[in-house]
Each structure stands twice: as structure tokens, then as C-alpha cells.
Image 1 (cartoon, rainbow, N blue to C red):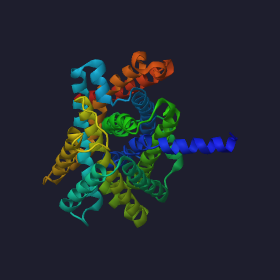
Image 2 (tube, one colour; image 1 turned 135 degrees about the vertical axis):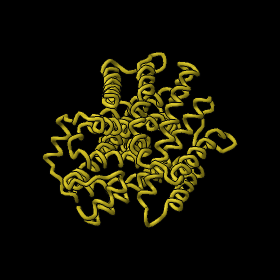
Image 3 (tube, one colour; image 1 turned 60 degrees about the vertical axis):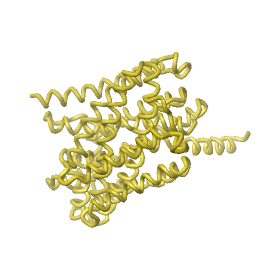
Image 4 (spheres, rainbow, N blue to C red; image 1 turned 180 degrees about the horizontal axis):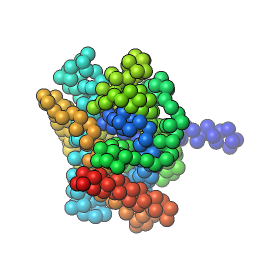
Length: 410
């Protein structure tokens, strides 16, 4: 076969395989994520960009592990943990995922409200968003849903434009990205931990592994799926950095404080112009809708797998009642919490991401062990370098959580 034909064939295969890594990565730039990055930029300028860089490396490491496990075993994370380590371990993993997912899904609907208020009140926007994402996911075919979600993810380009329009100090940004430095305060530790928890989110790990199974990828697709995973993770980090940079160049320079990404969008207008503000709000809405579609899906996969009732998007309600009921409950509960008068939306958006980092620890430990298990993974088990990378990443996150706990007590 001529070289040009081989390249064309490879691109066709990559296009068919791509999706899980891109969606799992980009969905980490959701409403709680954008809020976390906005607060980080507004409070600390460019100083904590290096935390985001390390978090992106961690995202690459564990998304590759999750994709590889799913492709080789044909099982989702909680189902595999149940089979290898028993019901008790699966219960621990499922409890961590459900707790993280409910808090973050609440954050997605809070992001919808923040992006549209005051023009559209939340009692209108949140139920409409909940109904819209549910109809998209529960009534569409697998491939149609994937195409819609991938199209929706293009909205993240708005953050790149917002960063450019803010006219940042690129030299200071480069220094913040490459030179570790942080104030030794509880708030800085909380912000750094939230950055880790929102970039490498527990639900993203479970979603990615289940999604490659649902998509019926095989070990022959593994090389292409690695490209998908790395591309999605790098794009996630770049978009997160753009949000930090946009807020550092404007809000931090002016000494402006914010509480959430909606505040950031509104505060940008007098500092960077109405276009930057509009782009930021558009990105927040798109990010919220994308993740609000995927988070309940991740939870439904995990609950079904933990109960030994694996399901796929193309299954009917009669074939997968646990899957569909779980999806519906997550959407209804999360949207309902956001509609409660006086609900602590900032705590939901920001603090839930620090909780994510804590809940990550048992999940990453399970994944690292499974990935090294030749009885499960065969020739695709993690080698020495991949194993060291996985455990070193876990140790880094544990150190971040430990530092937060120490500064919270002192």
C-alpha cells in the first residue's frame, strides 16, 4: 500500500476511535473546573500555573491507564474492582464515585445558572438544561450522542480567545508554568488541591473506562486511543491555563475578587471588553451542558457495573433499568439542589473539587494495581516505567491532600 494511502487509512481509523479521551478530558473543564481556574487566576495570578501543568501530566498518566484497562478487559472500573477485589472494595469505589459525581453534577447545573443569570432565572434555565441533556443522552443512539457532545466541546475555543483578549504578561505566565512557587497558606493549599481534583476528576476516570467498553474498542485500537487520550488531556490543560491567564491578567492585576466563574465573566467586561466577557460566559454555558450530559452517564455506568448489571447507551430501558434510573436520579437530585433557595453554590462549585482530590486516592490505587496485574492485563500490563509514573502521580496527589490537611489544622 502506498505511503499516502497508509496515512489516510490511519487517519480514518483514528477518527473512528477518537472520542472517549477527548470527551473525558475536555469535560474536566466543566463549571466547577472553570470556577476553580478563575479563582486561582484572580487570587494568585500566574503563580499556581505549575500546579495545573502537573495535574495535566497526572491526567495523561491515569487516562491512559483507564483506557488501557477498559480496552483490554472489556469492563468498567467498578465492575472490574468487584471481580478482582470483592464486593466490599467495589462498594468503597462506588461510594467515592457517587459522592464526587453528585457534588460535581450540582456544580454543572450551578454553572448553567451562573452563565445565564440575571437574563434567565435559574428556575427556568436549570430545569430546561436538565430536560435537554436527559433527552439527548437517553433518547439518542450512541454515535449520535458522541457526535453532538464532540461538537459541543468546540465551545472551549472561546477561552483561548478570552486569554488573548486579556493581553496577559506571557513571560510571567511562562514563569508560573515552569517555576514551582506557592504561598504557604490554607487558602493556597485548598486552591491547589481543588485544581488537582478538578483536572483529574474521579468521574472522568470511570467514564473513560466505561466509554471505551461501550464503544467496543479492541487492543488493536490501543495506539490510536492513546493519541485520543493525550490529545484530550493536553487540550484540557491548555484551556484551563487560558482561564487562569485571562483572570490573572485582568482580575488579579486590578485586585478584583470573585466567587465563581459567573463573576469572572461579568468582571472581565470593563477590563478586557464585552467580547471577552461574552466569550467567557458562552464557554461556561457550553462546558456546563457538556459535563451535565456526561457526569450522570458516568454514574449510571458505575452503579450498573458495581451491581453486575453492565449496560450500554444503545440498550433499551427494559434491558437496563438500573442504568436509566440512576441517570435520571442523578439529574433530578443535582438540579433540585441548585434550585433550593440559599443553596451554597460556591461551596458546591469550588469545595467539591478539593473533595474530588481526596476521593481520587482509593480509585487511583485500584487502577494502578489492576494495570500492573498480568493476570488481568496480559501483555498490556504496565511496565516498570508506567508503573512508577502511576504510583508517583498517586504520591503527588496524596502529598497535596496531606498539605491541605496540615494547613487546615495548624
